[in-house]
Length: 155
Image 1 (cartoon, rainbow, N blue to C red):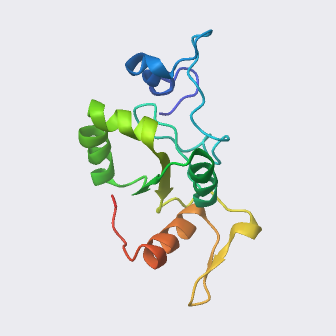
Image 2 (spheres, rainbow, N blue to C red; image 1 turned 45 degrees about the vertical axis):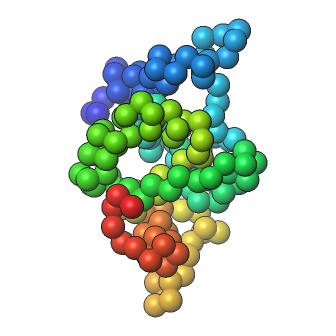
């Protein structure tokens, strides 16, 4: 997407849930219910396909999962991850899976290769080697390696 004048992808993304899953609409308006507990950090930059709503910050996802009493669906992903896009298009797009993702989980998409989103200083992480993780991708990659013992996408 190179222009902000007309963004067909955003129009489809923002309305697909309402079309495919009319039960997500409110009774008195044509707008869909807000499925997140609060606006997701970085949602102005990061998005998921199929109109899925997600968090991109671990702490936000944990807070919402506790509040909603739902498990977290953790998606380690990346901007440059071809296999991730294939998983989203071939697996997530299946109606039963998409329905479960929408209704049964709080989705957390952890972009491990993002270098553009700088974290506020209070969210920086210092690794064992003394290196400070100052970007969203650096923090997410560190969490994946240390907490989940993996360094692969999709995971």
